[in-house]
Length: 261
Image (cartoon, rainbow, N blue to C red; front, side, top):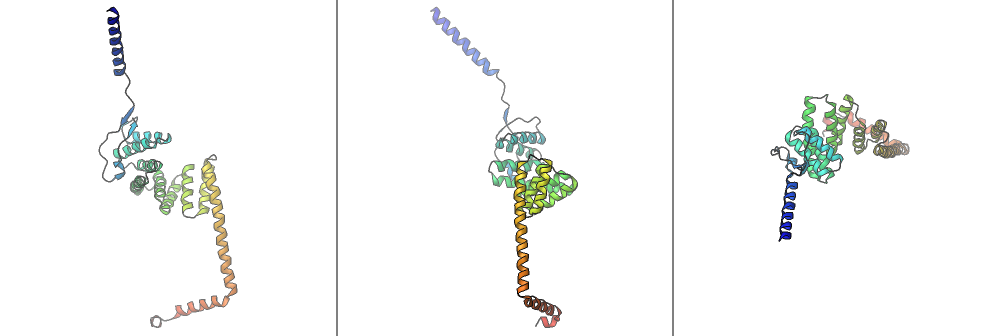
């Protein structure tokens, strides 16, 4: 009987200790972000929320800073949610859309990435209209256009930004990529060289520079070959060239009345 009482007492004590330890355990620092519904103009904000660490401040800049840290840690899904929350809290937070697009791209969600880049372009375009001397906005606009594949507009924005502020190594690298897409290899070479000057250890820029130099060499060789072909054609049939010039001159001197007959 005594042994039975002892067993019962030990069981109750153990049960009480277990209950206390669970109640006193610290709360998890993981939360599911709960914010107002996203604006209708931002369809990329409609993605389902995922669990993310709690940011230091519950505003757009706080979620953005959290997203950047998660992105650096390759926690892309959580980073995307943090950037999404930043744009929900501030629909005019242009860099939030840009980084959201990068996170979606890393996740292979191309359509959502494209929508985020489009929204970034819209917000940055409004910003540079108000603040044409905002160098950071011009450079980021160039990146957003490049991400969308509009390399001509990308270069135009980059060039405006470079006039206002010396870009960092990564931005010069992106500028070189945009020039490459336009087959402006000599300009790409210049951009990659600037990138390496600012960061000699950037192996991406070094490899890109070598490719751009090779492409520029092949492009120059093709142009020289075309020039030689034209010169050879002119030597073989000089009369044809002179007759063509004479006919063109005669047509230009013809009166409008005769020309319409």
